Length: 175
Image (cartoon, rainbow, N blue to C red; front, side, top):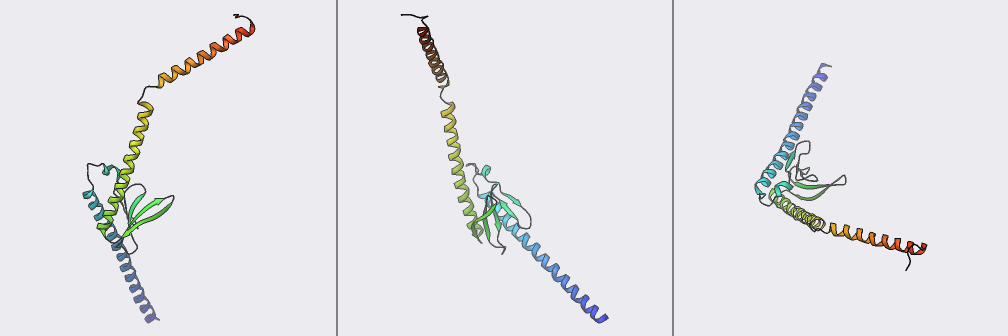
């Protein structure tokens, strides 16, 4: 019986060592993913121009965890594929995470992110220009007092006409 127990204990030790090696491999893989994402983050920080205001649009926050992610903004992030080598550009839309681009090349992902951010910058500029033009048409011209004067004058004329018609009808005003 002791021989069976020692064989089992030996097998148990080997299983524990294998499990520890597996956990170490998973941690190394997770750390490798985080390191690759951090490298991409530093590359993006160096590659973004300061003068165009892209730094205020892009977040570049590395979120650690089981599956580390590099957030570009509130809905766009870069994660690593299951193989640990490929970058995945992901967007969260209505509770779903949609992968929009995948590549094992960090330089290709860098170019894709810059292209995406350039499009978002153009959209943000267009939206701010539209907002400025709307505010300038709403508040830029001083026609508010003219409209108020027109409404008041129209009401006064209508009221005076109604009073004159009532007076003529009742016979209090005669011509």
